[in-house]
Length: 201
Image 1 (cartoon, rainbow, N blue to C red):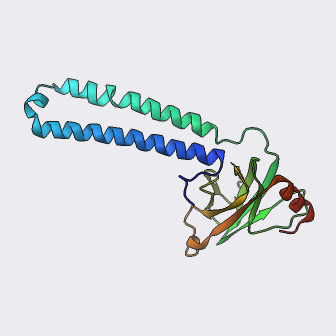
Image 2 (image 1 turned 90 degrees about the vertical axis):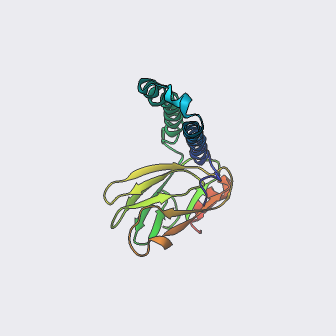
Image 3 (image 1 turned 60 degrees about the vertical axis):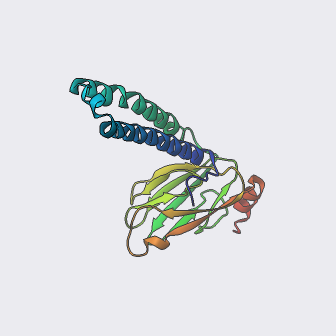
């Protein structure tokens, strides 16, 4: 269930953002370590830098471009995660201690504890909870969203290809939290349509 092994476009955005932030943080850390090393090995050179120069250079000129780059990347990639328009498939997901139930409105499919989705198509999951706050997360397919009693939230997931993926509750919800996982089956679109019409998972 690694978020760095994406199997869908939204998960790929999150993985890209993670790598960009890691590279940015590594570059900043390396620069600070170089300055620290210079402070010990070239103290005469460091002492010639005035406090005002440290504030302008280290406090403004250094972090501002990096923060602008990281923030811009986060805004662009994050905006692509939002569900724009209505997805062709809509599933209702309800959390409870310590399991998930998925319903497929307008189909013959009965409620299941496995999330069935078509591969290659965006799917909106309308997430709620029966008892307390939970959180739906399928790391290889997208981000996570809270399941709140009485307040539906929508997350859009998409799998690049048919296969089995795993999700879990990402919000501590009691002693059974660690076992609150669920299976996601991404089907070929024709097989998914037949499943929804036949209602036999």
